[in-house]
Length: 309
View 1 (cartoon, one colour):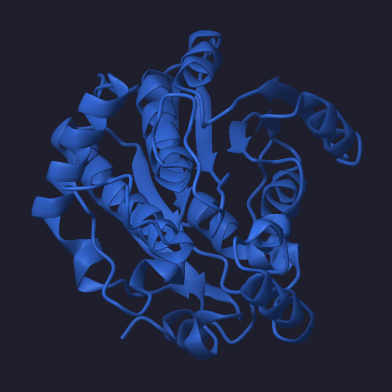
View 2 (cartoon, one colour):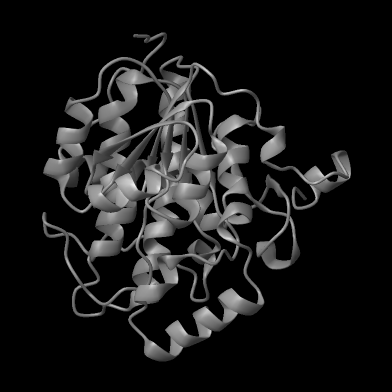
């Protein structure tokens, strides 16, 4: 089992102090206004970090709190035209893309392009962004998933009804989107390997971290329970960002999944963790990729080998 691998090999908890020097590197972090995204930006100080955010005003306020080289650029993952605009404006190399942004358990809604909001934002927006930026990326892509990908009921990708039209449930939609994140990472790594690219694709989950993600829950009762859990159980955002940072800087195998090593993976030091059988199915991963290309109009490009400038 991988659950206690990091603890067995190194009794000292892994912290931001273990992050190698980032000087000369460039990173993009989506959803970096607050919470896990902002904590990730703070920890990558030394690199030049772009906060890719929907609300640039909030982004500028967040950037002002960071002691390092940062800039803010607009990106609305629920609008594919915004994703294309962000990618088209990119010049030069990009060492690290962290697909952090997401929505969770929200009331039924649609993206600008008509997709169910959680699937459209959490998966399709990041799918399009990654592929459009891939010619610039030289090191790795880290995409945030969740233990919600293996929620009760054995979540699966509903290819017959991706928008869950007529049968929408906030948690089912969230679980589907987080399962899609892992399948995306699996197929992205397969394609990168096949292309001979040194770029690695990894996924991470924060455990239970107290952030604003739980604040828009469609259920008042569940929202109250989550806020109570934030106070009693959750890690803070800096601890919750550690699995993402570990995946971003450690020498790990492509398609690896990082999470906390504690009980139920809710908190602890980051390590490689397991995933549900559905999240490791290569056939489903390929099918999801094909469907995602059809829905977004974005395809796998020739990845970068050594882009600088």
